[in-house]
Length: 298
Length: 319
Image 1: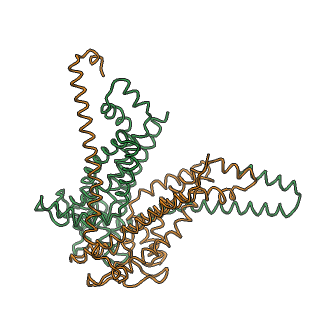
Image 2: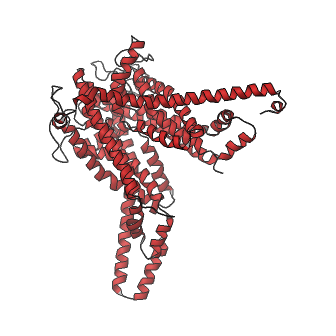
Image 3: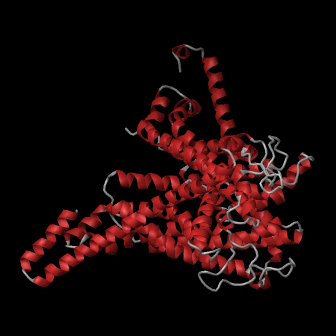
């Protein structure tokens, strides 16, 4: 590269070029090894869980309550708890998150308040999940007196996934072409009509995908719910908003913490169910996006 | 846009001259205004969340520091809130958090960066399209699954090579945590590299640089801001990670840098207290708010630095 290299003898040049090529080949080799390592661990992890737990899964495992005896224990309470918690979390977080996204994209003036809200969202997305658990414990469980109920858990989870929903919904709304808004306004629609009848419906598939991704994050979260005080041993199905509950990851954690190997098998089986539900959720997200997306020419 | 709609409505009123339209127009205006306020309220809920976090942590921490002096909290080398002889020194927990995070970063940073360079500069479009989602699957696995993997698979395998490794240790937890954050480092660093203007690449090729020279002497220095931001964000993630360390690293707050020993991180301690039956209002109960507050401050500072670096970096090559 330097001036002297222009006058370098041909053999030195050849040698250096060969060295650079060797370097490049080695680098690509290392990079492929790193990729194989990361993806290999993923396969190993799934393989290990399947190997440990697949034999334990049967109808009884899905429909039994937890038990002192590993062979009789099941995940019914945890599975139902997870489903209820997700439904309730969705009912709280989706309107709030999409509403915030619509405000920030369509209404927010460029002022200090908007800047604060945006900065705050970015920071909130980086707060460790366990901190939300502490917040839930003090705010919902103690101050609002909701106790360790399904509602307190759902509120905690809603705060946790709110930043994700807002950020993904904003991206979805931003992708709606401006011409669509202009056309609607030109035909005499008000701003609210434009947003409700045109912007949000067009952005809907992507908003939905973002929400499903947020749910799959919430479904696997353990720490905030443990910190909030969700029970680890629940032998009943929650019967209302204020009923105590447990979820799949907490049940799994409870089984991992026990010394007996037979409970570890249960933990592996519960993990398989958890991963299967996550896979299902993500497949639905991909399917819905490809199905609902209307082609829009800008 | 707002003025356009209003004037349009006025025009309508003028054209028809009817009272009913003007009334429905003002009603519609009220509705529009109410909805806007409602949406503003939604947006403000996130600010409320942050304020609530600061308030909750601050109040309980203030009550805690009434009984335990701040300097003892910062300098005492023992953390034993659950023993008869209660000591509240954050150092062992900080040390445990530091140890697992450093092990995780030693794995995640080089592996993530090399993958990022490969994806950005070497991989074909088709390979990128296939590899990136695969890495995202790794990032989407719940942390409790990684915890199970660390305790049931990685630790037994490591014990073959390091016989004195205890069942709970920071090495195994740190390694698995490192693998967990590889996708994050890779994807953020790749963004930093990929968005560099192609003029940089072309210019350095034109000057006779080889591909490796171009990458290591031009692209990486140019993307250093984005890469640093990614590293700091990864660090913050490692510090706040809970389930892997709670399951695989143990719950024994010891002031040690030996990765073979069981330790306790700040997050693991919070989990430990939450699982027990600690009465509300006691000093032990308040200690989780103090530890949580320390954790919150640490991650907040790191996230903020990362954000500032990214914002600065955005303007560096915006031309």
